[in-house]
Length: 564
Image (cartoon, rainbow, N blue to C red):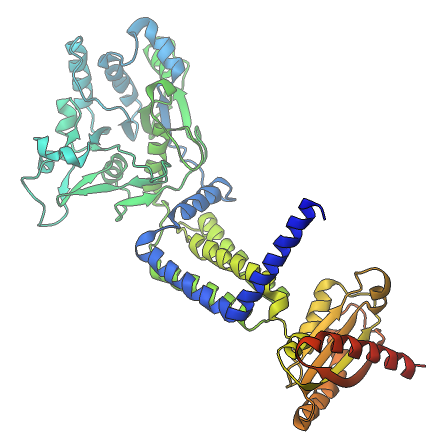
């Protein structure tokens, strides 16, 4: 025997011994033990492990990326983009970014003539331009004449709060959440440099906090710091414009599409046209619009990964958040941990019970597959047709993990767990009586699934223990003569008349049941069914296998003799 064949033989032998040991030790109770183990893990994961969190996020990303119903971007939200083309065009006159603030001041003055609904800066004006103080003054005066300009502020690491001199109550847009708000607490913040922005109540945080895997899926509505409600920039816009305001501290963004979904125009094109005596752009281009001034230029590093793109511009994320708040269609994600826990346990224990009761491989596969399909369908439909994302990834994933392990165990121990008269005789001693019933199915419409259904159906009929096996005829030569033959065997003590009577009744029931079974599962009802029953002496112990061979041969000979 060559080394490869020898290794293969030893591996098969080891697998057979191990599977036999498992079957002998646990039998079908393994499925219940495995379900109990999964139950402990599920409860622990719900309480503190949170191992399925990453799976849920990945599933959400896929569903968002491939959903059928995508809400349209609000046409009244437009982006004036400081893109690479603008940086190159403006550099000839104003140098590299950041440009003198007077440029933005002139832009505000010109765009206000068109009466936009709001002008939202996605630019943090944190420091003075020491080389252009007059330019800063110009910008400050320009925004002082408006009541619809909005400015971002930046929340720094709370670990630095003790070093700050900024108290939340000093910021006009910040309000106490309750009477317990600490009046002396300080927060590490970067506020706009300009007094006109500082004294307005039109400031908000533009911090974006990705999930632990670095992907932006949620947007903070506000921060609760020391009992103070520090609003995000979209929340400030929503409050000033009279939109409904989310109650949650964070929301799941209802994405409108990949990057550059919102209507956008280059800052340099708009600014040049506004400054020209011969304007080519529509004079009401921004009338009634929410105009967001930000940058998609990669060189300014305002790029974030999202479910839709690894390079999603931050200004588009801000536009999405404002759009969600305006239409109140951000995605709700109920934290129904107990409901998800109970659903997961129900899926696993229902599957375990099916395996334990041996309801049939095909039936278990169909029912489990249907349950998984339904759960996926509910989750996918929720993100397409509602604003509530029902995340069923946990029940789906854990149910599939249980089913896979249970199916592997069933495959490994299927032969050992089947009732087998030969094995039963080997475990007993003395003289026994064996009864063998052969049923020949002469139809030609028997595939593996149909054979298994018939075998399981016959196995459930009667009251005495028996072994039901089917000879498929897949082997060549002699065994091909027995294709589609059911071999049903019983074993009892030689002098046990009560068992012999039970076996006789079982045989009668089987003879009556075979025709209805064929009608139920087969494509044709014209199958020619023949059967024969024979009984004889069986030696227990080491001689059992040889005794059954002899009984099988005698049965075939007697059947052949009687059929002449």
